[in-house]
Image 1 (spheres, helix red, strand yellow):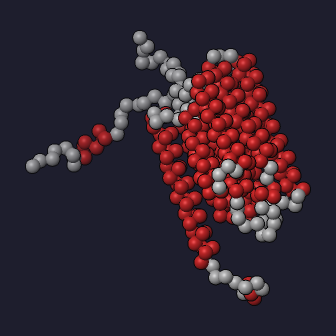
Image 2 (cartoon, chains in turn blue, brown):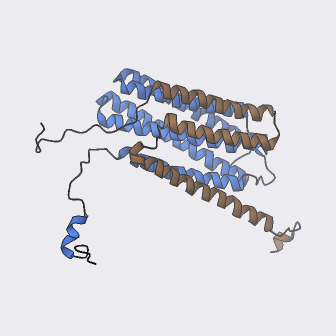
Image 3 (cartoon, one colour):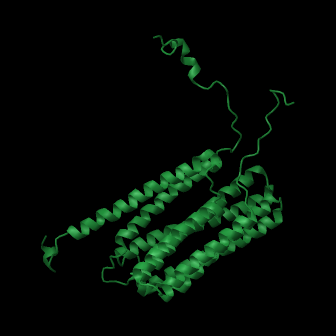
Length: 209
Length: 122
């Protein structure tokens, strides 16, 4: 039995790819951004786990049922869901090369996002007024960390959105801007996905406790 | 014919296409899957256990709806790597969430009950 060539050192050169494959600019941006979103997902998973473990430790303080207003949360959820839809409209306008329409829908998305953030800040302010501050109990620490982290993400999403609108005004629908807008759309929709977890596990399950 | 030395024309980057149909379906399904759990919790037609199970199932279903219709997730996106990394992330999350809850639950139930005041002496 002979096994020619396999152990021969001269053959080693054939084992790597000699052809240079094309790497168009930005061709892996979407996947890279997806990887970032997955790692962000892990941050939220850790905060959800904290909330799941500590969510019942009220330290003789207020419980979810004393604090949460479901109507307000429903309104907040509607704002975020509508902003996801209008972002979709912006993307569709982008594909039709309609810069003006894209900007209008992005603006509407920003307004819905700002409304979401405003309602959330109003809720936080209301809780602090009641004395339900993050220092009050482990439940409230976990609550403010989880919901606050989501709120900070939305805030930065809004900053990015405003930046994109300026970029689009200046340079139009160039390839780089389309790529950036697709990344922002993934970020925005991802935040809506996280919010599904927040309203289900924190607010709705909290009311059931 | 493009010669080998010509500057390579930037090839269009593959981007998922957003369509009105996708966003319409995604939005309608999401509204239903959001309205039903809020109604279940506000009106309480079922007992707590069944309500909790149902709203968790609806949340999971809504996450899948968002992934498909809003994030344009398909098994073929980015040569399958998007889905692979998503599945990996889900596995890590499940291990971490289930593990945390399990460990902390055991810790809670195995703690020795302590009369009031004795904890301060330790």
